[in-house]
Structure formats: C-alpha cells, structure tokens
Image (cartoon, rainbow, N blue to C red):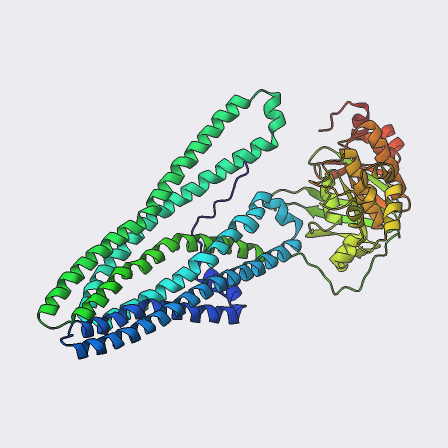
Length: 596
C-alpha cells in the first residue's frame, strides 16, 4: 500500500546535514547577515526596557520635595522617550526579521528544489525502478515542506530565543549576580524537564506521522480502486477499514498534541517557582541594603520572561529534527550518481538513416544474484524488423532497456554499426532512437505540443505530417479545438487507442533511425489495433526496428523472429521457418503453449 512517508525520524548525521543546509542558506549572504543583525537588535530591544526600569524606580522612590519631583518628571519624560524609541526599534526589527526570514527560507527551498529536480532528470532509470514514485514525490512535498517550515519559523525562533536568552541572562547578572546564580540553579530543572517531554512527544509525533501515512495511503488506494470496490460490493468493508485507520490516527494525534501542549505550561510553572524564589531572596537582599528596589523590580521582569526563550527552544526542537531528516533524504538523492553522459564524444548517429545493431555475448541482471539475459547474441541488419517473443519475464523488454542504455551492461557489448553504444553521447544515442511503449504518457499541454515533444524544433506542418503518418490526424481534427485541444490528466479524455496514436506521432516527428515498439497494441481493440499497426508500418519503413509483442499476428511480416526463454535465444528465423521447425514458436502460434 502506498502511503505518506514518515519523515519524523532522526537524521543519521545531524552535523553534516545542518552544515550542508546552512550552505544553501548562506548563498543569500546579504539577506542572512541583515537577518542576524535584526535578530540581535530585536533581542536587545526586549532586554533594554527592564534595564531602564531599575534606575527610574530608584530615582522616583527617593522624592522628598517639589524640586526633586520636577527633576523626576523630567527624568521620567526622558526615560519614556527612550523607552518609546526602543520599542519602535523593536517593532521595526521584528517585522524585518519576519519578512527577511520568509524571503530567505523561500529562496533557500527554491534552490534546493531546483537542485533536486535537476538531479532527478539525470538519474538513471534503474533508480526510478528501485524507488516507489510516492517515495520520490515525498522528497518534493513532505520533506521540502518540513525544511520550509523550519526555515520560516523554527530557525528564526531558535536564533532569536538563543540571543534573547543570552541577553536576558547578561542583564540579570548586571542587575544582581547573586539572584542570577539562583536562576542558574533552575536551568538544569528546566532543560531536564523539557528534554524528557520532548523525547516522549517525539515518539508520539512519529506514531502520528506513521498512522497518517497509513491513512493517506489507504484513501489513495481506495480512490484508485473505486470500480473494484463497487463491482464487488465492498463498500461496507471499506468503511469499516477506514474507521480503524482513522481511529488509529486520532489516538496517535491526540497523544502527540497532549505531550506537545504540556511543554509550555510546565516551563511556565518552573519559571513561576524561580520567580517566587527570586522575589523572596531579593526582598531579603533589600532589607540588608545589598539590592535596590528598582534593580529587584527589573530583575523580576527579566526572570518572568527568562523561561520563554527556553520554552521556545524546546518546542522547536522536534520541527528542526524533522527538517534535518527531510534535508538528509533530499541530499541522499542529490548525491546519487548520474548517468554517464559521455557528452565529449564526437561520434554521431544521423536520423532517418538505417543502422545495424548487434548484441555480442551480453550477460545482464538487474540485480547481481539474478541473471536476466545469459550470453545473448544476435544482430539486426539496417532496415530489418526484428521481433522478440517469449514468456513474461523472459528478457524481451530488458533488450529494449539495454539498447536505449536505460541500463548498462557489464559483460559483452552492444554495437551500432560496429561501434559500442557507450562510445556515443547519451543525448545523441537516444535522439536516434524512437520508443513506443505499451503505457503511453501525455503531458498537460495541447495535442500539438505533445506531438512536438518528440522534436522541439519541429514545425506545425511537420507535426501534422507525423500525425497523418500515424493515422492520428482524423481523430485530432474532430477534437473541440483540433491540434490546440488541451489534454489533461494524461489524456483521460482520449481513448487508449487515440493516446497510442499520438504517441506514435510523437515518435514519428523525431525521425528516429532505430525503432523500439514494446507491446504497443496489447491493450486496444482489434479495429484500433489495425489503425496503430498501419501507422507503425509506415513509421518502420526503412528503419531498423525491434518489436516486442504478445499478439503474434502483429509480427508475421518480421524479417527475423527471436524466441526468448529464460534469458536465452532458443529459436531464430522468419515466421514460415519457425512454423516448419515446430518448436516453441509453433506451440505459441497454434495455442499448444500458453504465453503468460
């Protein structure tokens, strides 16, 4: 079952992941430095009002006559002006911090997303075959969202809280070193309590993410299989299963939110105890004239807000941990080895020119312990049509994957005109190949743009000629806007046969030298099959072609038919030769052997 990936796991290497993430943040150096300066100024502006309060109170409480009162009023006015200026600076820097952090976060995530997508485009097919598509998508969605949330909120709060905590503590030492020591004694209790709750909260958040992933996966799977659900009257069973998934998520989410929500109250209560202790000791110090009332008042203001930065640091820990785990998963993809492009090669393959293709003692397996092709050798002369038949899993599609270098072989060689295909640049090799697969894919664009995808510099006239060649022109003209009709959701408004005809037109406009047709007619009706075959026959004319087919009627006119079983070629010849041999091909054609 597909599900949302659980990203709430600890990163394996926090230090290197954080350092690498900060390099992305550091690409916007000017913004980052302005942000840090703004945070520092904002944190200082939080501490200054309490520092101003101390001398102001001490001066006001000693007023004994009108002269002193007038002087105190003037002093009060000056302090109020200073306080207003400090608050104004605090407001401005607070807005600056928020604005810059949002801009910095989005630019950073934008850069990471660009690098991730760029790397995806050059990863080999074997990577995508080995990783579920949902897992890959989670890098772009869940993991990116976690990083974005951390950079938008957590990172600014962490920096601000750390600087505020340091500034507050320095101010407390200045006002009363003895009371500052008392506050220090409460710090281990605060940190120990918060770390204990964070640990339990983290476990519950992981459980929440896991059950959410299971719930999302179940919903996605059910939506995709609605026809099956209704066909077998499975609605009540599905509802019952959904209730279980939903209840599991509710229970996990409730626990996670409860533990997450008690961090702040516990920290506030510990801070209240610290406040009470500081007040008591401060009163004693005043009695012995070791502390002024103004300094005690200012200290208590700072003590009241001392726990807030610690609480914020604690509450942001899980978010940062989740973001680092997501960043690590993204960096794992970015660090993957790309396909060997061999872009410096001067060798070229010309389109619309037939070439010979040879397999020489090819041994290949997708995994080392399982051989798919075992010492396979064959050749295709220029312009020949070579058909590949055999049981499912025999290795037919693997041959197509190797010609296109979706996978590279380690034993043997594959040559085009006696030149190893590894000697060509990957771009030039694939530009000379035309591939028509059983599963078509159309993009969210117009019909014309989908055809032009085969060759981006093709003119409208060339695209229309390609559509005519593939027998797609007639149905395209009947579409609401003809070639300008926009296709959505992989061309769901078209039939399977129409999608395949567009796919053939896309290949036709690319003017390939070598064609690979992989079961292109296996999922269409007989009439549409004939249209597709007519289009493919026109396309195959004069081109070296490999045809993989389960329907043997489509390959009777092939120049050579290769029968593959268990990764080896067991028969080769044209249709009549193989029928006369009365071997495996004869069994397939006469129905004496069921092709699976």
